[in-house]
Every structure is written in C-alpha cells, then in structure tokens.
Length: 141
Image (cartoon, rainbow, N blue to C red; front, side):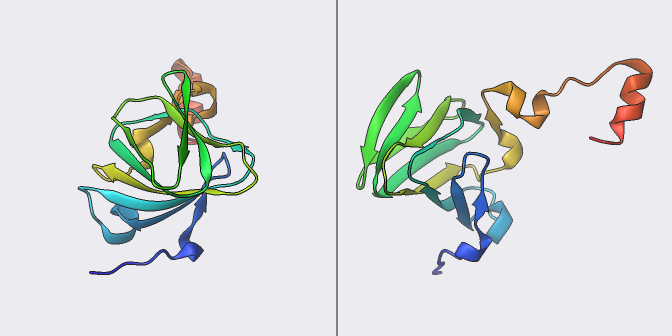
C-alpha cells in the first residue's frame, strides 16, 4: 500500500524539528514500527534524548550532525545512522539549508518512550510532592 507525507499533520517539536508520521501508532495504528519524515531547520540544535526503541535515520537532503556518546558525527544525503534503544542522541543542523531525513522506529514511536536527557525539560521528571500537597496537585497531572 502506498502512503505519502501529509505535511498538514506535521508536529513541531520544542527544538523546531518538524515531524510528520506516515506510518505508526498515530496514523495507521501500527505497533511494530513507525516511519516519519523529519525536517531539521537551518541553524538549529536538537535536544539530547533517549528512546526505548531502535531508530534508523535515512538522510535524504542536506547536511547536519548527529550527536551520540558525546561525539558529533557529520551526516549528509545518502547516509544511514542507526541509534539503538537507550542511546542518548540529538540531531543538529548548523547549516543554512534544512536537514531532511526519514526516521524509522522499531517498535513504533510512542511519546512516552522518548525522554529528554535534560530531565528539567521533561514533564516526567517533575517531582511529585508528598502528603497533602500531592493530593492537591494530583488533579493537575
């Protein structure tokens, strides 16, 4: 079956990356894998994160950097980058043109399985108060 990128369904992440899922839980109710089209805008820096799924990046346009393990690796059109589950990584684009790639996740992408390494920017890192304060705040979470 043929699928196309529907850019009207794009989601812009906190780092400015535009992500359009083509296959996956959100679009086709597929749990085994997901495929998303990603555009990293010019002169942008990604957020370091870890996933509970493997991810493969297929670079189709532009040049950029994949940060992994404290090192930055240059990537360009035609490159394939494998990110095993629980790998801390970020995609950066210091250039004047967008970096575009396909992201394939196995199993399918789930937002709760992708966590910012900088815990202060992730809602799951919020410490819940104890006792009566916890009960008052519970309805806000």
